[in-house]
Length: 378
Image (cartoon, rainbow, N blue to C red; front, side, top):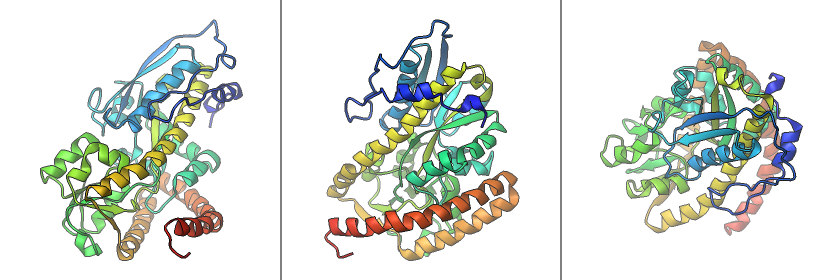
């Protein structure tokens, strides 16, 4: 990574002076004036940000809003970005194209929507049966993952920065029970990315729709099933009113990193202190979104179940079949794409190492503590 992409230590110090004043998703860290000093030679920048999210999803769209406010604070109002919801400046599945063509300077989106351009972009978001949020951040920031992903984006004239994470997602909404892999055959399901490709190998007709279209598609029977994210957002969308069965886990998204993507031509025009402020704000939001979802999903799930939703686990047979098919798909993509192959090899090595470690410390703790909480014997 070039030095201009690194976070300035002074900016990190400034970020430690930012505090959360409340727990709501739109609360913005307050400025500590003792850590921020205005610069007389500041050059004003005014950008627009297209996002893949409706404003009604206040955690994920709120993360884009928070980023913009933090950036303004860190630059004393000299670098202002206005976020727009899906459909205002670009369709939710076309944000990357809007940034590439210069329609907007930056976007907040998931790389899963753009695998037709470059399948290696999948690593930027998540991989089926891959890394959870903690492991993904470790790979991105300490395991060379971000540098590898930025090299892929650079070929498209873009640069990316992680700016949000959903945590492990749920496995989707169905109006019929899914007991075996055979039950998936013929189902039309809204599911993007590699997860959709694996589902297709299990007989599903995988359909990619923007989030603002999925509820109507389910109600109108355009699709038979949908996956989005987790209880908090799914309740906001009203998916529990459109389907009966709620499956888990979302094996295709053990986490989902959300990217801030910027056109390289615009990024290189920024002074280094603005680049550092940009990266600092993105890093803060990357953690804040994850915390927000973890804090809100449990309560939302309780509400959903209390209204009659039937919570179902995917059977071991379905999970095992999907895992085998995901490995086959990854191997095929590695043969077809040099970029995918290069990242896949290093990613696999990191996953093996972190799985071994977390299999001892994380799983060892969780197998006892979670069972004790549920009243079961470990």
